[in-house]
Amino acid sequence: MEKRMDSAELGARLELATTLARQGGQCARTFFRDDRLDIRLKGPSDPVTAADLAVDRLIRAGIRKTFARDGILSEETGGDTADILWVIDPIDGTQNFSRGIARFAVSIAVCEAGKPVCGVVYDPIAEELFCARLGGGAFLNDVAVRTSAATTPQDALVEAGYSAKFGHGSYHAMTGRLLEAGFGVRQVGSAALGLAEVACGRIDGYCESHLESWDVAAASLLVSEAGGTISDFFGGDGLHRGGPIVAAASGLWERLSAAAELPRQAGAA
Ligand code: LIP
Image 1 (cartoon, rainbow, N blue to C red):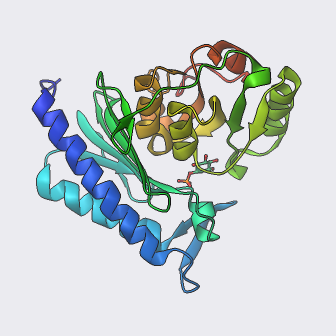
Image 2: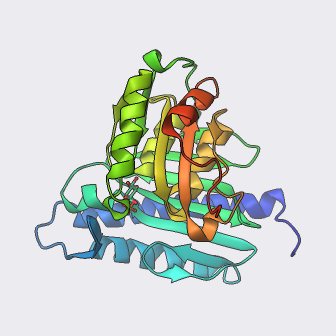
């Protein structure tokens, strides 16, 4: 394996990720609620829009210009693997975006040896920029954030993400168990923003039966750097195969994980 990035090399990539997330967000805004927006379906309830592709191109070009030897993996245009790998979701929450619902974000992470070491999630409508680097804490608009102090389901609001790609049977069962256990449950269509809200304590937990690495690479680091607990998504081969995720305030994780009944490691057989 190549030598690990030093602090300056990591800092330079976090700075570029921040700049590109803001530029990508402004680009997405130019398409938002435009009746002429080109929308195609990749699968059931799984749209891709001209905005996703434009933001993807913008971010790729920015990385290529500055870190030509780094690898890039993105939702819309795939990619290679590399020791230093940028993992991009140009618009997380595309279904919301395509319907003019102001809940979506640009998500950019840098992974080293298959694990996130810095990440940015930018909501261009709320103008909220979440960022984190390994060992450096998590921030919202430059203010340090921490997960909540919730410890019991009765005090907790969690998001249970859903994707039609994986059928609703298991989702019904999972939300039923969460409600039975006493959790408040919601679903608002962006894993990156849901996890970012766990990191800043707005909600107390997030679970979803299957996500891809581009949905969670940046936001998973936000949760762990904000003092939360998150399942071992990148421990197995989550980077390439995706998998389940359970994230929560540390005092609540075991109870959420028990109720969600999702495997603790992504990419596991
Ligand atoms: C979405 C996730 C959401 C999940 C959707 C989809 P996309 O990402 O943020 O949590 O339920 O199925 O994966 O496709 O909008 O980037």
